[in-house]
Amino acid sequence: MKSIMSPLDLSTAELDELMDTAEDIMANPAKYAHACDGRLLATLFYEPSTRTRLSFEAAMLRLGGKTLGFHSSDSSSATKGETVADTIRVVSSFADICAMRHPKEGAPMVAAAVSQIPVINAGDGGHQHPTQTLTDLMTIRALKGHLDNLTIGMCGDLMFGRTVHSLIRALIRYENVKFVFISPKELMLPSYIRDDLLTQNNIAFREVSRLEDVLPSLDILYMTRVQRERFFNEEDYVRLKDFYILDKKKMQLASPDMLVLHPLPRVNEISTEIDDDPRSVYFKQVRYGMFIRMALILKLLEIKVD
Image (cartoon, rainbow, N blue to C red; front, side, top):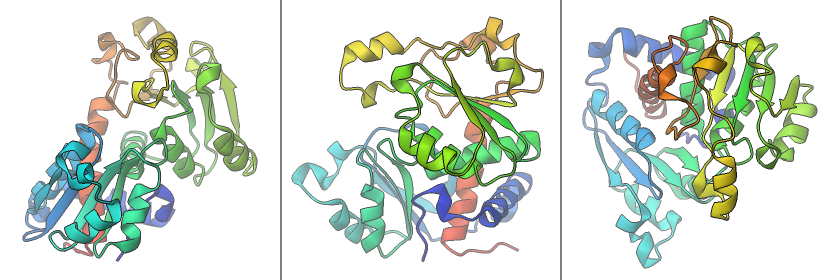
């Protein structure tokens, strides 16, 4: 039994296999419609989520399975003091697989250590968000055709953004990937990513504060929101939340085949005026996310569809 805490829990060969399965599901949905008949997915979400929780639930339902769970800690026995470890022991008696989101880093790992069923980390604090990373990789590969030889700009909250940290860890395993990190100094990439991961592995990157300066050189622009829930005071959040806004004027600087991704939800860092630009693929990205989660559920349940 395997659980997924980080994108690095999967080799690049396993990632390719997952993406191949996801593409096959997209092309042949009827073939997979009953693959999980009789199986149950538990969604244990200790903090709010729209896309991730609904994406997991839609994935299981489209595979013929069913779901159960809670969507906030307020509606769970956590309010009575029950530990994550005890909760997963109980849920293991009901479900076949579990997706867990938790505000504390490492909580899904604690659950996986005692669980009788596979646990998927659906986001733990500012730490990891592996299925968003799978979604991002799937989107890039499906639309670009490859994951190597790319210049990838990451813009916004690079300090607290778990989606950014997970995606960097996954992408450095591919050939000739270069990074451009665009952020205010208060939200720059943390040193444990910059020094311990990128510098030590001789990965090419640069850090800038102006988006306009680097847009022409990017193959991918990964936008992120400034996350109010990660700030200790409202004043800092208000000061930084509008630092970058991607609009039509800025998009004119970008190459015709650059792709704009965003893990969503957006606040106002991407203007709605560019939603119809064919380079804006963040809503396609959501759909790819459902298919890659379908593939992951099948892999962890060891279900093969001929």
